[in-house]
Each structure stands twice: as C-alpha cells, then as structure tokens.
Length: 461
Image 1 (cartoon, rainbow, N blue to C red):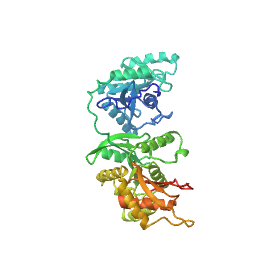
Image 2 (spheres, rainbow, N blue to C red):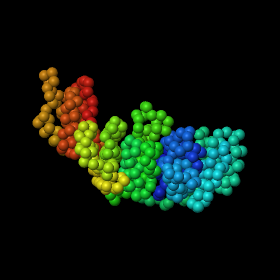
Image 3 (cartoon, helix red, strand yellow):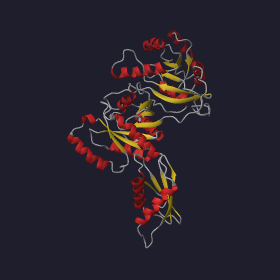
Image 4 (cartoon, rainbow, N blue to C red):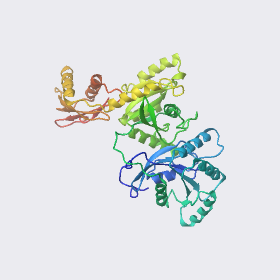
C-alpha cells in the first residue's frame, strides 16, 4: 500500500508471533505484483514472464496498525517436474505454514485446469483461503470475476494489483481472517542477528542455507541463477538462532544488468545493507574472479562484518590448494581482516565453524575501546613512530576518540592534515593492538587548523 495507507507504528507492534499470509497461484497471475502492493514497496522481483519467483520469500507488512508477514511463492503447477517440482513444493510449504492463504487467479483468463487442481491442494491444507481475481484494472472487467465462483472457494475479491483497485478491501478481509492476537508479553531482547549470504551464481549459497536449516528452504539447481529474491530464514547455528538471507548471485555490475537481474542486484545490495555480517561464499575449486572481488568490495564498502567461506572444499586437490594460497595472498590482501573458513555445503564439512566465526566478527563489529585506553595506546604509538616531517613541519596527533561502532569508527584530532599513509598505519596498528577480526574499521582525521586535501579523509582498515 502507499505510505499514506499504511500505519506509522512499528512492524512488530502486535504481541506474539506475527500472522502469516501465503500468496499462491499458477505462474504469471501477478502474485509478486500483489505482494508489492500489500507491503507498499517494490521489493518482490516482478517481470512480465512466468517463473521469476522461485523460492518462498517473506516480507514484513502492516495494515491499519496490524503487523503481519506476507510470503511470496513461485508458480504452482500440478505434476511439475525437475525445477518446477521444487518450486511447487516451496509453494505448498508456504501454504502449510500460513495462517491465511491468498489464492490469486487471472480474472481476465478465468479459471483454468491448473487453478482447479490448486483448489484441491488448498482444500487439503484446511487453511482459510481468500480467492482473488487479479487484473481487474477497470469497472468493465468486474463482470469477469463472476466466473471464479465456479472454483468453489466462495466470493472472489476483484483486485488490480498493478493499480491498487480493491486492495484495501482485500487487506481488510485478510485481517478479519487472522487468528486472534496472542496476549501481550514483556518485551524481550532484540531479535536474531541478521546474516546475508552473498556470492556469485552457483557457489552454493542456497545449498549452504539448506544445510544450516536442515531442510529444503531454497530451490537448488545446478543451473546458475536459481535464486532471484532474497530468501529469509531463521536457522539455528551453534545453538543460537540467526536470520539468514540467501541472495541472488551477482553476475554483472548493477549499471550493466537489466530486467530481473537488475532488480535482483538491487535486492542483494539492500540485503547487505540490512545485514550485520555477510558470509561471502567463494568457490574454492575455481580461481577467485572479478565477480568475487566486486562482491567483497560491496560488503567492505557497506561497512559490514565479513566471513569468507571457501565452499566446495570436497572438490579440492593438492595442486588447487597450492594455487588457492597464492590467490589469497594476492587477491585478498585488501581485506586481510576478513575471517576465513573452509567448508563444503554439500557434505557438511566444517560448517560448524561458521558459528564461532560469525560471533567473533559480530563482536569485533560492535567493539568499543575505552577513551582512556585508546589514548594511552595512541600516545605511545606516536612517540615511537611520529608523523613524517613535510615541508619542515610535522603535524601532531593530539588525541583520539571512538566515534561509533557497527563498524568501529575512530577520529584522530591533529594540529594539521596528516598523510593518508599515516592514517593507514594507525588503522593497521589499531588492529594489531585491539583485534577487530572480521570487521572493517574507519580512521578519520579532524585537523585543529585549516584543513588541506585529505585532512578529513578516512582510512579503512
């Protein structure tokens, strides 16, 4: 819905678990367009071809102050095979876990054999079902909705997901079908840490998600590019619940992508921004590519904690290990602080090492150094290695403060601009003294006197 239609309150204002709405239907009836209309923003990937949505993807929604979760699904078809069968299974899983099902039919086409087969599946679920006749873009088309009574699901709701006609009435009906809210409970600690799984296509992101979740949460296919939307899942790793987001594999720069790939790239970038830590999957059996480097840079520039997981370790041989060590020294020297684990999502090898790495990276990302300790260390550092003399003078570092965390940010107060190389030196020494393993850090300069070029620059380490 538009920003004016949606409530201003927090998405989680209701106590207890949020009710879940599953949006299902055959391919290309406008499910993702309806999901975008419900959540009030273009987040589900939409394109005028069938089969763009493949996994079940959850989004936060709010209508008249009631928060809920809406789940977009891939097109459901009976007797589907191969990848289509996996997509249909995801839709059926969404129905099984939903409180209310919104069944979308193309009102212009009318009920089809596939729609009738879907009705049988929905009746077996015994869930409340709201029948939506979509693509009713004007008053003249409203008479077409009468044919949907034949499906036996009661009164159909005429809607234009594209233009918003009838969507408010539909949302009122959805809320009326929800179970009664649970009694209010005392506010607990903040929710699970948010982890983004990122990497180029076919490095095993969805396989790792399924391995960690111990069930098929995401469609896995040897064809690269199966995931298009980010897929949120709550999984338990090392005895702790984490919120993992499986993202689309990035092939091209956003500016060069088009269609589905363009929007998927935007969703992946947004998932990184929303995450606290990113697990960047690299294919250990293949050379580190330009695509890998670009994704690593995206995470670094977003200021997120990072764990690099070298996947497909089961395919390694001694020769490849030798060359990989050389590649790591050469290609990853910009981010030596990133934690690294060697895993196999397929066999489960060393996947249990992810949890300690994630905890370390997050602790570093949130680490704060007391001002007294920081300046005691800094005084000793600049006495031992003062700033080089430039033009007969050398700026002095007066003191420092930690301006923030997530990631850690430090400000050096100086008598004048200092060299970028000296900023990097201070950042490197900060790591040697205080750690920050798995997290980027920033070191900025605030000169006491007039500031020349680079005087307010930042060093990333």
